[in-house]
Length: 168
Image (cartoon, rainbow, N blue to C red):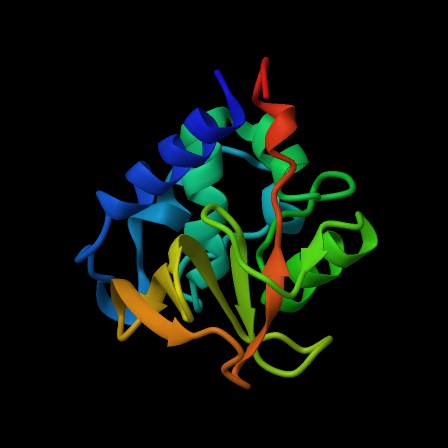
């Protein structure tokens, strides 16, 4: 698989989830999917909580498996995960994978630097517009568009796509 094929695989999976809604008390299928990994998210359940990071993590795990997903997302060691946006942003920064200019497949982060509060997956970039797919936005998986440079956007984590690509 090439880097571009890996990016396309993740984006296609996320795109197919658009419109999926949460149940009562923030219950969602993405947290349910990840429950089988007992050490993920410090061993605790992420059910019935905000789930944007859980969505991002589940997309990568479903597409590439747990170990490759953690490498893609720059998670330094288990039992972590992107269960909190601020930690996900921190992992990308510490790995040298933090960007200010988006590309398709990046993880977009919002909120104050070091205290990020929301994230999603960059679906595409066109001109001055970044299109994203985000879990837990208005209680569902949604497509959104933002102006590049919007002050709500903290930055972008570039997954280590080489971890799942056997050719450039």
